[in-house]
Length: 157
Length: 317
Image (cartoon, rainbow over all chains, first blue to last red; front, side):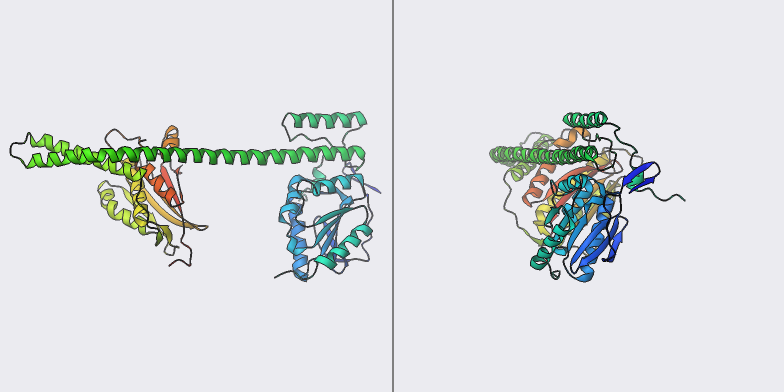
């Protein structure tokens, strides 16, 4: 599906069915959904381009969700919908994401561009939170379940 | 009212129209990066295809390299400044040793001169008393210089103890407040009522404050400004440190003199006024406290000296 907006063309690379997931929060960048207990999914809006301010807003929202529950979730991020991420936003995730509030980041990158974006995310400024890249949601979910079992639980006071 | 633009709306439309254009754009970015220019970017189509991904990779690489080079440059500059400080401190330490040795050697003949002159003044057969008095005063002045040099080169052991932060300022003003008033210099103090104690030798710190206040007074006496002469002394607590600031509304220090301010015998005053050791002695005292002293140009153009010392820990009485 291609949408035209003011002469620019965006491809909707991934259609995501969130109807079975519970929406628990979100920002201008997209929504946070609970897919299983202690496993959240970040679903960016189509054609999202992340900058420093957007990254920080998303992280603040993720922190709020963790504190609200008092638990350290694993977060799956569907990168295929992201068209770009700049260096400063990568630094936000690398430096400001508190590993005490989450047990892992799982990047779902099935497209060429998403894998390139994910590689930079995990490269020079790798987050302190354990992060892995997966080609599909199923792989990400399996890893997140293991992370929650071994490293999840209540947030330390 | 138009809605605020999103990053997507700000993105340039189009991107390369052919493989050749795409390769040329990527090549141009890499060439710019090779020349040390990290803000070049290849246009993107945002289609997520291979050429768009290549453009993203090249752009992100250029961006990250630019950030890294910027960080490295900043750290290199900080290292160079730290190195210059170390070299300067080493020079002062060497000068101090030398000066201390010379001062010790001069002390004895000076003492002899003063004794002879004072004896001669008591004698009725003495030459003109004005000349003797001149010699006596010169000898005393030389003795003061020698004492300053000796202190700079080989200071006596310090007595470190927690003291009220305002104690050195109070002690210094006891000595100088009257003189400042006589010179028509307005004295403004800013001392918060509740402050942690400072860890230090109050007598030595008083000496630092006296030196700074005396320098400010001298600067104002030499300078005829439109506004009334004023010296401001302020203390504040900042992240575990006690910070003293002495500021005047004089002419400030000329840029070419700033690097030499804390060197022994450096003086911008006319010959005969000052020993040129006040700031270097102060530097040594502050250094021995593990603190920092620095010069800044005040907003109004005068001189500001800032001394930063460790606050006493709460457990210390």
